[in-house]
Figure 1 (cartoon, rainbow, N blue to C red):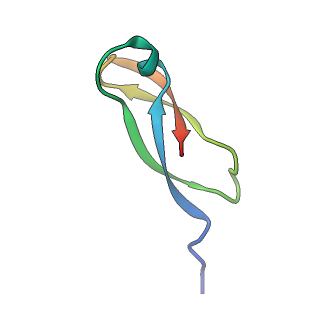
Figure 2 (spheres, one colour):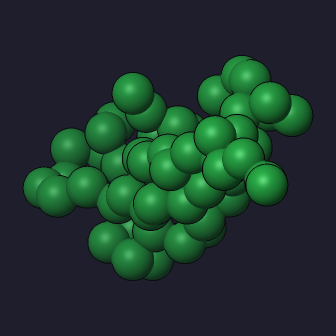
Length: 60
């Protein structure tokens, strides 16, 4: 029987949006394998408010 305990949902939040001063936030929900990737994830994702690709970091 396979265990499902290694995959967890994480929330990614834009780093540039906080410093821009514009209202709202850009967040994405994704999953990661916490056994293979114990540190926080950083991915480049599209920010619809800023209309460009920015770095999103894992929060929580």
